[in-house]
Image 1 (cartoon, rainbow, N blue to C red):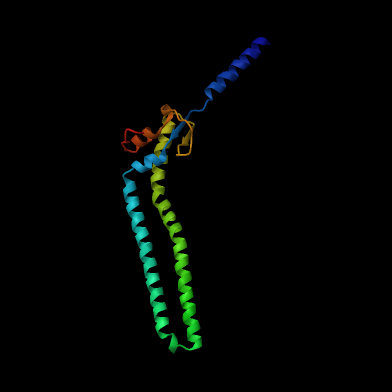
Image 2 (cartoon, one colour):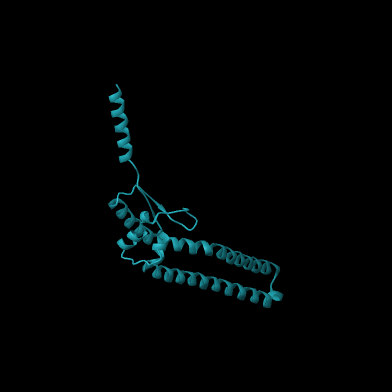
Length: 171
């Protein structure tokens, strides 16, 4: 009976030792910042932002022209015409305010759309490295993330190398 218990205990311990997980870390934001493709993303985002600014300028210019026209001709308008013109101006004001509110959201959506392929590329390389080195879990390091990371388990350099990125000496 003792032998069976000892064998069972030994078997359980050996199974749990073999089932140990291997955990690593990655600083995907740092890799992203070093990717040459990021320059194109930043240029595209800047162009998109400029396009939105140009659209806003057109809306503001049209609004100002409409207000000026109203002020110059208000004396000749009938009451129903005044009301119609005032409603048009108010609608333009609301449209400009809405466009301004949505502008930052539109830029964020575009940024996410442009960065998605880069994150997928990092994810694919990470998956290959993690599988090759038998990692069961990989945590993403952020500026407010883990308090301590053993550099021996940091996959950042290996993933960057897999992507053909030469990281600066600091990482």
